[in-house]
Image (tube, rainbow, N blue to C red; front, side, top):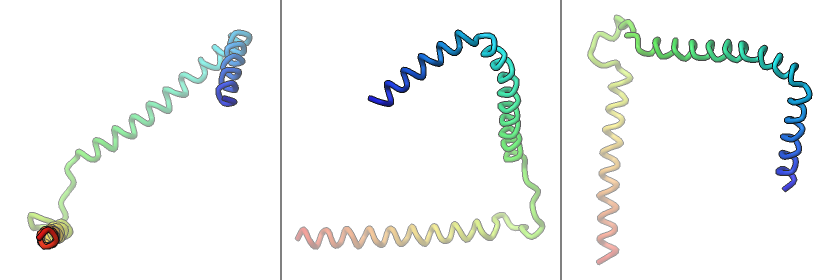
Length: 102
């Protein structure tokens, strides 16, 4: 309740402040708009640069003459190993469930 009352009082004082200092408010607003455009444009340009950089094809290393790189093939082999382990554990779980139900 205290936060609500404080928010209402702050909003009321803000409205009064804008009405009393309307000229200065417009001057502040006129100075803040170019700054917001500058910061927003710089951020958009940076994000666009990252996106373009990600889409550009990377030059291939001479060491990676095969179709797959070594780390990628290691990841695939490890993933296959974990898939087999999951299947084995599922089979054990089903076996233990059927033994407890019997």
